[in-house]
Amino acid sequence: MANTDVLAGLDMGSGRVTCVIGAPDPETGIVRALAGAVAPCRGLKGGVVTNIPEAARAVTEAIEKAEKACNQRVGGVYLGVRGAHLESLNSRGRYNIARTDKQITQEDVAAVIENAKAMPISSDREILHVLPQGFGLDRQRGVPNPIGMEGALLEVEVHVITASTSHLNNLVKAVAQAGFDVIEPIYGLLALSEVAAAPDERDMGVLVIDFGGQSVSIGIYSEGWIRFSKDIAVGADFITSDIARGLGTSMPTAERLKIEHGGAHPRLVNGDHEVDYPLMDGRTLRKVKTSTMMEFILPRVEQIFTVLADEVTNSGFADVPINAVLTGGGAQLKGMLEAAEQVLGVSSVRLGLPNPELVSAPEPLLTPAYATALGLLVYPQSQAPWAPPFGAGRKAAGLVRKAKSFFEDLF
Image (cartoon, rainbow, N blue to C red; front, side, top):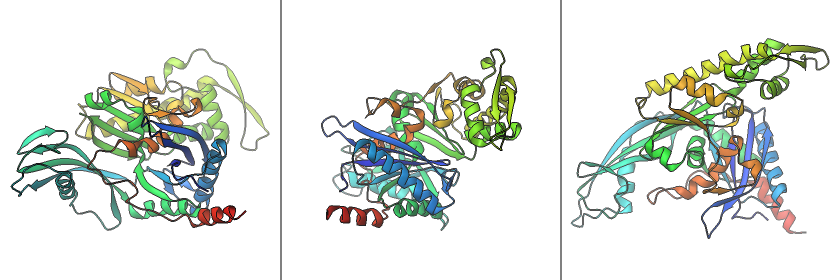
């Protein structure tokens, strides 16, 4: 039977599904990750499902590989959502405390947040998250948590993230078709930031970048709150595609050449040597100089980071980030940190790895490629007291998995 205490963080990203299985330690509160797995998927593009059966197959493969590795059965899935269909905006809400007792309660905070999200959105979209950015009490701003304080007027500023209803439904359908329950969909950037950006960084001001294969998520934090977020339809697969087209080879070969012999910064052009590689037919061999590969890689890297820099400039919060945290599968190309620092113009860029104070995991999982999936397990444990309980949102019955477990229990 499934262990309801063991959950999965499922990052459905760019052409791949990443799963981490784990559970919170009741004594320490640290999430203990047990195992992880990655499955390639032709039914996903930039976080959007393009083929439900293929996406479901990849979900099944990733989760069952992770289950086998730790000899556990998953009780539910936190679903990571990403992609350019996500949109965000900032809003404000007010709530008058009419009671004689002016002490602010959790219900009052929930009411003012509800007022803040009362905005017109198109019928094909739904609200995924409403995230407070700070409260005000009797026109005094800068209150991090008003519960227990007294006041007549409660105000809040919030960051609202919306998603395409159809894209969200297709993700949930793919997971359900694989036979698993979705506990809650979570914006992957929020989960990632929880484990990869330190609290001090989020207080001082930081730009968090999740560099995926076909989409890049960026978020700006200050004073502990998220101020701006956006998903952009660019990514590391664009670099791979440039190499594949330039050399006339396959995407897997181009990816291998990129990781083993490529680099994202001119300083890495240290000498020059030739590398053998097969053409598209898999048999005909050619040679390419590493300097030639850099001619394909460097312009695309500069273009991507220039797009990100423009988004930060136009966000209205360009003066906030002091440093940047770069993570995700695309961050593992040599020289990406140096390229990001040069183009983005921040003081420093570091590689975002999961915080061991929040998550305990086997060494192979403590990498940028698994950071979002790990964060999906940590994020629900970190929510403020006024946040709605996780599991109160969308849920799709995993009928296939439940039936399978039932028959297994008979023997």
